[in-house]
Amino acid sequence: MFRAAVVAISVGMLLTGAGKAAGQNSGYQVVSVANGGIIKGTVRWSGPEPHLGGFPITKDPQICDPDSHKTRDLERLVIGPQGGVANTVVFIKNISSGKAFDLPPSRRSLDQHLCRYEPHILLVPEHAALQMKSSDATLHTIHMEGAATYNLPFPFQNQTVTRDMNTAGLVNLKCNGGHVWMNAEMFVAPHPYYAVTDESGAFQLTDVPPGDYEIVAWHEGWQVLGRQATFDVLTEKRVERPIFSDPRTWEKSVNVGGNATAVVNFVISAK
Image 1 (cartoon, helix red, strand yellow):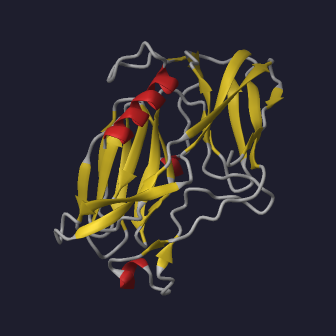
Image 2 (cartoon, rainbow, N blue to C red):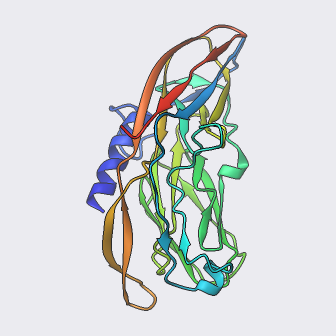
Image 3 (cartoon, rainbow, N blue to C red):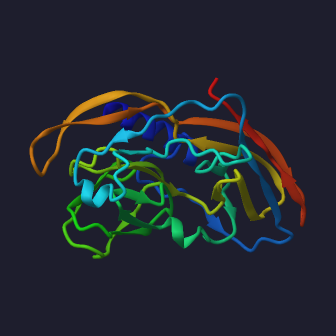
């Protein structure tokens, strides 16, 4: 928990600026954007792809593993056919004003389906609500650590629960109900200039005020460093949860002209 908290604090400083105290409003101002530009590009993988084995499904296989695969992909590194890296969060660092929030609704709603979190990467505006439900006929929990700290049970199917996300930063999600492979990450965003890459590695930020910016590409990290002993809060049995490597970030500078498109491409690797 200590390591997760340290990571959340450091990423939160990256998001909002080192001078922002926890819980303080980010100060982003919505203004009319004249002659806004576009920042677009890709995040691509370079070099050999790491071998990432599946994690054993050890609970509720009739619900979590109806096709009897026995293991589950932890979804920590998704590389498309052309080398694009999905689930990378790309955002403008330290922008103080611009367009109104328009983050995609699909990233602000979480489902627990077949004992996995959908979507794997969430984007919720600061002070907005995250909607959560479970499609599974088993008891899940959503345990959050970082910029938000909740531990929410979901004993009933398709019952929606909402919680406001009032502090910008990174939030780690996991299940304390014994489904130890379930994991997801959420950014509580202090401004709307965030995007998540698709399977081709593509992203796009629109209506960007003309100017000079630092663009950050953030990836949750893909290595499994080991397993941590914990307890299923429902059965009180000992279980083992995967321990993940820290997130990784890359930064680039870009100039955005009025009514112009700037291209920023990232290349990442296991090095």
